[in-house]
Picture 1 (tube, rainbow, N blue to C red):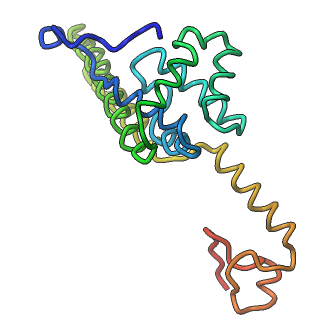
Picture 2 (cartoon, helix red, strand yellow; picture 1 turned 120 degrees about the vertical axis):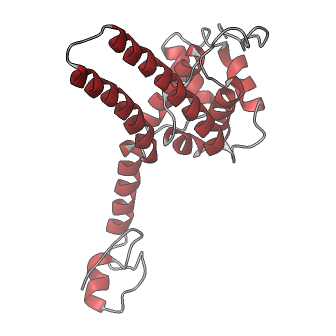
Length: 215
């Protein structure tokens, strides 16, 4: 890995961006460790939320695997990094294996992801604050325009944070197609909860999870 954990000495003097090395490792390790952990993490964080560049590269490889509906694990991520000539850059398979060893279980991946996301929000606020400060020092004639730009900067950060509440559409499409396929091949049989109305059961194959049917 090109960039190691930063030294702690002297950080009280220097103003450094908020980041958490352990949390970033824990998120990536959890995603490699357990099937399904990646989907839970991606609902909260993305590659740009990681502070260390090598972690961003690894996360982008995970996203690429997920977009191809491949499992996110040591084999697929290593293959994706190797395909893009990035495996050695991030420390090779040795570092990916070390990430897995950082977490005994992926049960807390959401907590780790939230820590990474929170640090990313703070860094973006610092960046936005610097831009807003620079606008103020320019002493512009149109103060209203500056206020609009400042408001927009903060709004974009808040909007990006809220977008983590949504699932990637690729995952949802796959699940929906699989559900429709199962229903199609079970035509005439109940795959959901019976409604008590024979004709409706025949059409819908029963009430499915997430369905709202008004009679």
